[in-house]
Image (tube, rainbow, N blue to C red; front, top):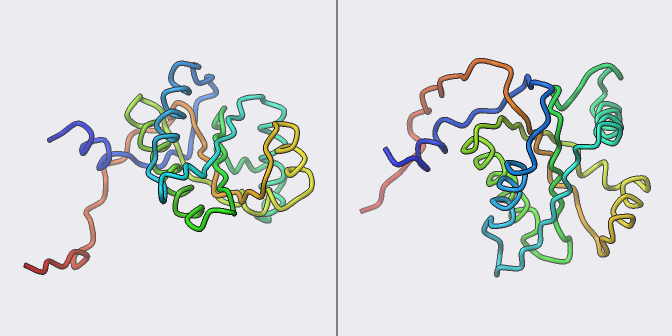
Length: 175
């Protein structure tokens, strides 16, 4: 089987990470793959914020917990040391789809380089707050962006899971 196809089939979400930092070389490879995700009319409307600063990462986790309704001591990022936040430029009609493809590329690239990942929601709600709008301004980001998702990223601390059998009757051929 082709290595790329095998990676797409065997990638699974990771919900338990080691506390080892992600090497910059691997982080950059994953981010580059995200930047090459398909986008409507090649607008490349998604942006990625890479957070490996522990204080900011923990602050984002705390806010994510508040939005999700979890206790403060719960980690919605499952111990991942790095979070890649994908946002879509709301001025582009396909921003949500473009951002989703970016998330998919990030997770698939992470698997291909030996890292684990998991899509975590609530980025939309976070970036509707003044605190996160200020974060974007501090990074020099202008325009209106919507949070698409967080890609929790790091080394897996769980045994690989065999992909479950796919449900039947999901493909229909018209010859």
